[in-house]
Length: 367
Image (cartoon, rainbow, N blue to C red; front, top):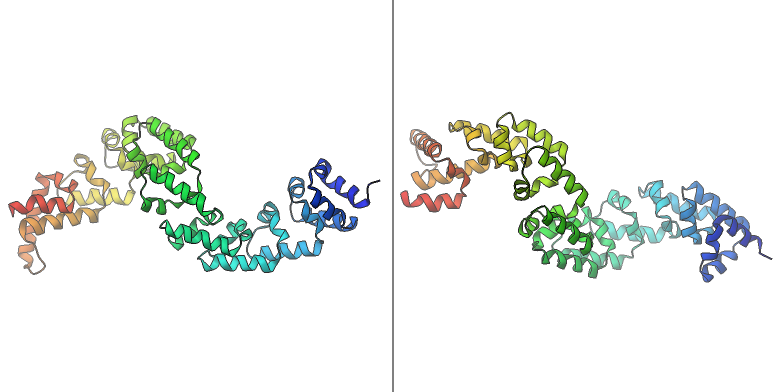
């Protein structure tokens, strides 16, 4: 005949009782039936589902006061009741162990709110956390980047290194990998699937490597964004060249398109679709900058893709190279040189597409 404790467990777990390991079953059956009932009631009160209780049946062996104490401690760390119910295994850990693990996470740069957002890390011992943090630093991740991508601390170093090696094999530089650290949490299979999809859109491997953030996006999202760009009249070839646009949601692209129409015709925008990924401030300040040189932005759209500061630096490079411009010159002489540079650029607007070094190299011979 089944004991009262067994009957209570069967009532709570149903068929899950027969799936308990022999060792766990023996332990829980030593617990008084009333304690099991109260533990079950407390777990339900804390928000655990029947499935979660079945998965972590060992919690039924704990007295309700201990469960409440542990839950209260987790809440004091900023962990929401919903997360506690989801990560019910934390209720089986004593506050001292959790505090020790939290202290370790804070010591490597995770603020309390980040720990509360990634409470599963509290299950990892400090040695494991420290080892994983060192592994991430060796890949070039800063403490701030590690804190932002705290979930990586739950991966073992071998998995992280495998994922990093796979990304490098796709042509992604170590520096970019460190910047886009979220890619390290993705399996090679998922990344390869996403890379293959991008290639199917005509995007070259080199472009994929330079716009590696696209690898973190699902094919469905990429396709939705590509379809929207096509609906504006942008050709697949232009989309492939300006693949960074696939990282923008359709609402943002639509707003940018409407803003660009204040300065450019639809044809110009479609032929220079990269402008749709530029900020409104960059484009508007560029339009104003070009106007000072008597150049219509409509006639030089490619120059609106860089900041006004970038263009000012190019003008200064031209002034120094062609005219020997310096701070020691008189005001009248400076003004004359600037006017000369404006006329020069107006007749040769391609200068604004050149790098400062290229300007110095090309025009120094005419100096």
